[in-house]
Length: 201
Image 1 (tube, rainbow, N blue to C red):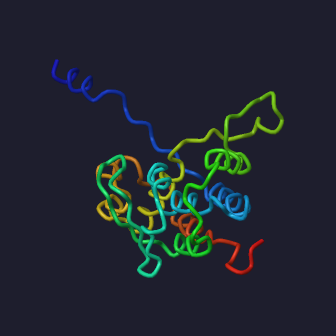
Image 2: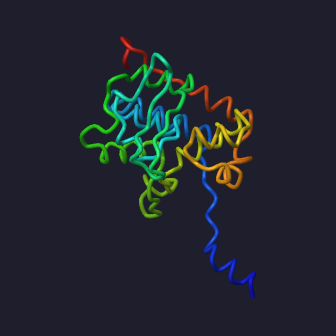
Image 3: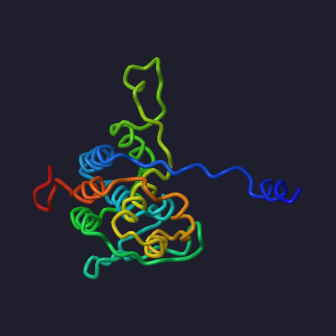
């Protein structure tokens, strides 16, 4: 049966990407900027507003960030084995300017990353622990899935979104349409840093 062979070769269906709500995005970034004077804010910003994969963000350094021209360059040492240069949205540019120079992967990165995630309400829920029973299970690419969905909603182009995110147009068509509303996208890109240079909280 040709149809049976075709279905078998395709394997299991890819799960739908999960995205964060705008409130969850805001909470995550507020926790990041308040934690140890925002030492991980650059990492969270390039993931949530720049769509970088976790490994891409951890390998990033400031020599690849061009704030004057509003762009950053991603190394070819990534999932697709292809580098790319992305334009910074005003939101991402604001976060990077506010926290300029802080390493994207500072010492004790994983410990601090998990602490911020926990403060924002993400982690492994434990019904026996009052502090952890309401946690939302975290997915590695939550932030990337979220911004790709908003980017597509904003520009409406499969090609531009695929090029920006380092995906194929088919992936965008299959997984990132209709995930967010126009109103949510406007609110998402309005999440600006509360701290300013020279006026740290």
